[in-house]
Amino acid sequence: MVRRTKEDAQETRNRILDTAVEVFNRQGVAQTSLNDVAREAGVTRGAIYWHFANKVAMFDAMIERLVCPLMFNAADRDARLAADPLGFIRAATDEFIGMMLNDASFRRVFEIFWHKCEYVGEMANLRDSHLEEGENHIDILQRAFALAQEKGLMNRLLTPHQATIGLIGQVDGLLFNWTKNPDMFPLASYAPCILDAWFRGLTAPVDAA
Image 1 (cartoon, rainbow, N blue to C red):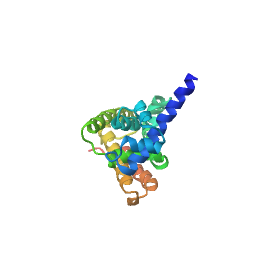
Image 2: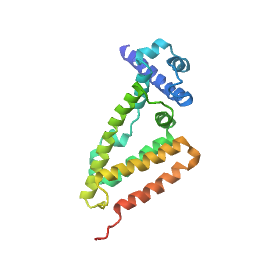
Image 3: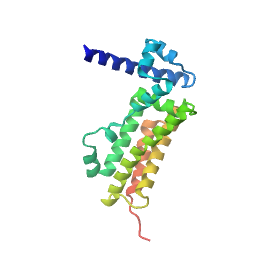
Image 4: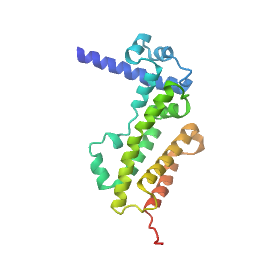
């Protein structure tokens, strides 16, 4: 019975968060109240406060659910990274773009984060904390690029950190602009060829000076 109660509570929490994504995406974070979310989720305001202290806590929980499985959850992540560092990076990049294309809820969270939230006060602090968490992505990518150079799989035109920042710039730039205006370009066909060209630049031979 206790287990069922915990499962019910988790289901309610997930329903609230799923609803928050929809309402935030439609109305913007600043224009959305907890009452709006409660009403659309079909729960009481008390149920909202049982799970979340305020709207900032709800927004935080919504962001926390964003996970790129290969980068963080795959049991064989380190083995795959060691065996084929550039292949690992490309697979993780393709996985992330694929989730943006195929998982509407996942994509909407980024649309909210990038385009539909004013970052002032507590929201600014929250944004900064999640930007700091992004250092985990940078560390994993930089380690993979460094290993690729050690293995002779990548030229040395860029340092591992420069390559990491360059890749983040490519991916974030594509996704930021596509979520802002999907009619600007077809992400599904543009992203692979753009990234193919970028990765070829990393592996191209460099003439000795």
